[in-house]
Length: 357
Ligand SMILES: *[C@@H]1O[C@H](CO)[C@@H](O)[C@H](O)[C@H]1NC(C)=O
Image: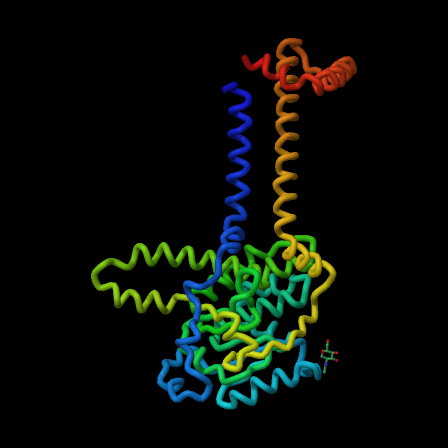
């Protein structure tokens, strides 16, 4: 093969590898269904079953919610009340803006600057839930999610999140023991992921929101898998396994979350902050086939463009070597270059090829 073409292909391969590497976790989310860690309906005792009391209760009985201040709007009061009324023996914490900031300033001062500088209030509402789960443990519930039954069976898992469609997990209902390694990783990842993606919706999703949480979840599972591989030997694995079970993040699937009589939550649907860019993202979600095809098309066109420019550069370099002085340096050089380009556009490939023989 000609040297020029080989170099061109290698450079493009490197670029593709780099791109795939940087979006690898996002790609794995497309094929992740969470089934390996799913909490199966069969392992959850029915509401009011005496079996519920026989289960270990690892997560502390605390319900966390967030709102701007203590005056919860009328439309969410019923949902809020449904959770409070069902859990009179649980501690209830409503994290207002003031309380959230105080808490971060006291317990996680290294995060205060980032917390204060978030451009969207929802980013603070996202972040605070991870910190309180990491610090106190308990169950976080969005204010627009009501409770359908007591959450006691969910206290038996050291950590759980909720599966969403089409992909990933949500951050609107989560539970954890204090200092669970997953939530520790989550709060540690907030600063590195704090980037401005120009569209507010994407910025929120990917810096603190569900997409951020889903990506960290993928990374956490990958890291944990490699640890399982090195820790668990054939002998004495059961003791280890308990330790590993504790670090596992279980996944609450759709039916157990909503819509069924035995589901834990009732979704009231009150996303209060979706803007026009959110509609764009939802549209993109529905048309991902089209977008993928256009992606390949654009990549092809860009690839050809790079090939063309590469040919021009080789050609100019060759001219420069022959002419002894840079064609960029003088006005004559400019004319020469323009002529070169015009001529080159018709015969680019042959010209490049000739230099390369
Ligand atoms: C609480 O916040 C809401 C929404 O920003 C506002 O309308 C309301 O006046 C606030 N209530 C108090 C008591 O500050």
